[in-house]
Structures are given as structure tokens and as C-alpha cells.
Length: 562
Image (tube, rainbow, N blue to C red):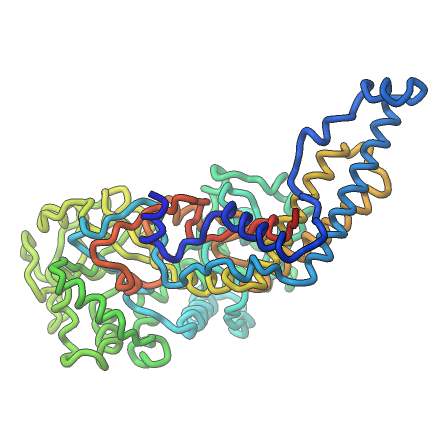
């Protein structure tokens, strides 16, 4: 079965045991000097402790002194292992260079999916079918800050703010009570270097002072505001800039008001159509053309699949964008609607999945909605509003045969997942983050980090805090500093403020990964990546699953020579 799954997933890395064995064989052939095993042996630290040892070496030696001597010996051994490890850090092990690469354009599987059972493909528009340049975030940021100043009477000095693309990542949380932007891990703990008040990063001591502990858990995290979609970049940056402005000006403010105002401004930008008008007026600046998208949609039609478009955006905006993106690859710019069996705009997700709103026919020439009831979907007709209940009654499409592609984990995918549809999360950052994780320098730092973690664990298992001598404390200080350097090096490879989107600095999955795991059956960077797989492929969860199947965790054993 393992061999079968590998054939279906050529981008999956082999197990760590396979890598360890390969590295061991190459090491034995090329090295003449052994390297001490860094693995933890609990029994090793238990043997020799207590009064029984005193009777073996002489009754004149007190048990407590023996404990201290024994602990000192163990610390010296760990120190020796650390020095050996530091020498091995001078070059990247061959085994790391030979590790297989993950596919940046791969489809990663949380729940098994048989493509031969999927008969209906549904798509969101923004950041799913439509690809945007970084200019869009600056546009949203600028329009929102102008609304804050002109309509909500924020200080005019706020107009000097500029969007900083190096600051935010997707999947952050905002604490409306304390005013902090937080990056949480898979289990709801605040990342040590992932808490910002304004643009100022808080120390671990300050985090504990504010929250009591950084391990706040998922229950308390539910009271935070999740910034999960691709439009949240400008929102997170503007929130932080406003908070920092008030702090610098020594102005009293309520953090919840800041969020409400910024969120209102961001929503106003979308609902007023201001951003839509700017994008359509200069599509070359904001939209990215994508020839593979048309090929993918046509391939699905040729295979006899049903296609539908379900978006919150107005039809005029979608139409302008689709025409621009496909104009170089389609004989008729108006023909994009022919690719879809149903086109639904202004669907009001996520309420679409739970409401009883009726569908309305939209007249694209007059820009009006009809008053007649909709009891069937007519080809080439555009519909507004509606609800999932009516959609299923009209189409007769059964849940498991439908897959829906979207970028927003809550608005796009949570409703379909609960309704029995299969779900595909489109996460554009996935490609760049996998490319970084494939890089030898990142894997090198990750393996170093795991070695330091193991050595720290040995020290803590050997000596209780109350009996740590000078040598022990010095070793702990050095190990902690090495760990800090590794974490900092890995963080800088992704985002200088919050690090990776999917991982914390310690290699643990982030809270954003948790939501992907919860609501997405599969995830990938673009819908057209499905063209890389046979139409009847069975997509399996990797047999050596960690938490997120696209992660490779580089083991510290790659540095070891037995």
C-alpha cells in the first residue's frame, strides 16, 4: 500500500527512518570517527542516582554528593555532544542535500479524495480564479485610511501611512481587548516572537504579564478576531499602524474601537465598489493574466464536468476581470460564461449556506434584478443572492460529488464542508513557502534546531533547576542562544515580523494550519494545479502524515554518525 501511495504522490518525502538509514550507510562508508548518538535514553539518566550507588563506591560518600557528581558527569557528556554538534554545523550534511523536494504546485491532502467521483466543480472568484498583484493590498490600504480620516475623523496624519508588505501574514488574530496582533500555533499558544502591539514586538515577559501565560488555548482564541483571507493583509497592517500612532502620540484609545473602525473602512472599500472601479480601470496594475486557468476550465468541460461560479463580488466586476484575464487566450472575450453551467454573483457568503434567500435573475444589460421566481438555472443567465438549500433543490447535485474551491477558510469553505461538499483551499503563499522549505539552508537550520532541542531536553532531564551549577547554567545559556539563532534564521527566510504562514518558529504548525486541516479536504496554490494529476486520480492522505502533509521535518539524526 505504501508503494501505491508513493506512486500517486511523487512529491511526498520518504520517511525519516529511511533518511536516517541512508545517512547512516553513507556516514559509515565515508567517516572514520564516530559521533555520539544524541538520542534521549531515559534509563541512562535514572541509573546511578540515589543511595544504591553510594554502597557500590564506598559508604563514606553521601548520596547527595553522588547525585551531584553523577549530574556533573552527565552535563560534561552533554557539553561534549554539543561541541561535536557545533563542529558538524560547519557544513550541510550530504543527506540533507539528497532529501527529496516537495512540489510547490502539488495538491496536499487532509482527507482522501477520488477525483473520479467528482462531477461538479465550483469556484470562488477573488484569489481563486482571479490572481492579483501586490498592488491590490496597497490600494485597499490607501482607500481604507482615507475613509478613516475623511468619514470617521481620524487624525489627518494617518494619511501619511503606507502599506508595508513585509509586516503581515495571513492567519493572524487580533485581540480587541488588548490591542495585540497575535500569531498562534496549532494548539492555541501565542508564538514567542509573534505578538505585536502596534508595530512593536512584545517580549515573552510582556506576553505573560498581559495574558498570564502564552498558552491561551483554543477556547480563549475563539474570542479573538481571525484574519484569514487574502484581503486581511491590508487590514492587519492598518490596525497595527493605527495602534502605533495612538501609542506614539500618547493618546488614550479603546482597542476594540480601532478594530471596528478599520474593519468598517475595509468593508466599505469593498461594498462601495471603490476598489472594484480602480481594478477594472487599470487591470494591468492589479490583475495577473493566467493562461492555464482557461485550459483547466476547458479541460473540465471536455471531461463532461459541471462548473459553477459562486462569488460575493458583483457581476460587472467579475465580468471585467474574466475578460481581461482570458482575452489573449479566447477568441471571444464574452465567452467565459459559456464555461460555467451556473453563475451566481453577490451570493453573500457565508450566509448563503444557512439562509433561505431566494435567487434573483440579473439583467446584465439593464443592471436590474427580475421579480420572477427562479426554479431552474438557464445557461448563460446570471443570478444574484440565493442560498444553498435552493441551489441543491434546483441542480439536484449531491454533496459528495461537488468540490468547491475558495481562498477564505471561513466564508468559502466552512459552509460547504458542513454541507457535505468536498473542499479545496487555494492558498497562494503555499508555493513560496514550500520553495523556502525545500532550500538546503532552511533544512540545515531546522536540523540544527532539533539537535539543540534534544540537548536542552537532556539537560533538563538530568538536573533539576534547584541543583544547577555554574557549568550547567553556562551550557543552558549557550544552548538557548543557539536555539534563538536558529529560530531567527528560519523566521527571516519567510517574514521578518511573523515568520512562516503555516509554521511557528519551532516548527510546530500554526493556527492557520489548524483551520486548513479542519475545513479543507485538499489544498494547493492554484486551481489549475489539478491539471498535473490524472482526471481519475485517487488523492490519499500521506501514509507518514505529520499534521500538514506538505511539511518535511528535517530530523536531527542527519547530523549523527554512529
